[in-house]
Image (cartoon, rainbow, N blue to C red; front, side):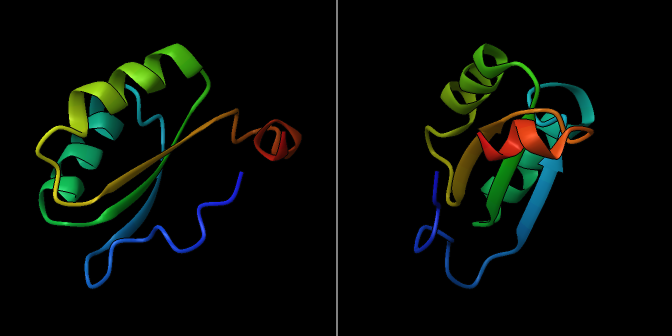
Length: 78
């Protein structure tokens, strides 16, 4: 899946693992509020989609979910 051309201009860019809950979700919320782009990585696709649904309304930035395990590069490429 390519996200080329979808990065918010001028805002911060972050790759956040564990973005579907806890500190990762809080960081994503903060960056999106400031107009940033968040490549959000989490193992659970359903929880990641729930995070997207909660964060996108009213967000100034872009939330780009990627389900996979950062410990296994192959899971991120699928």
